[in-house]
Image (cartoon, rainbow, N blue to C red; front, top):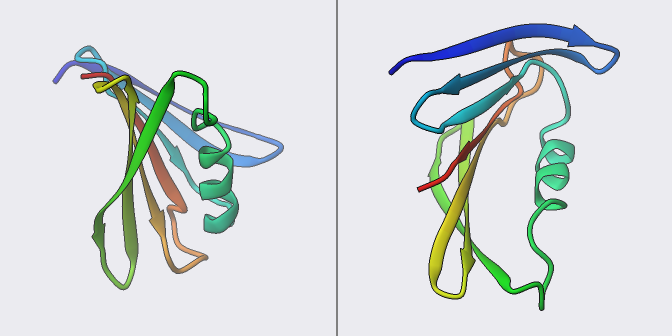
Length: 103
């Protein structure tokens, strides 16, 4: 698929962003606490009584990685999906990948 990628760093560390023309966008995070990264992502989920709902689905889990999908609905229609893969062991080259995809 065609797309673009950017790599940069700031006071929080190194990261990369990749975007495909088909609508998939991913952030590659090279350092950070996995629990804090998950909490940060979940803070963006829609609150109750907002007209939106979500379902959390464990996609896969191994000794090194855990991938979870957050499917966001309006009524019964899937509006978008967020997927986060975290490294379960700290200190490697990659802490997490957070992706967004609209159906």
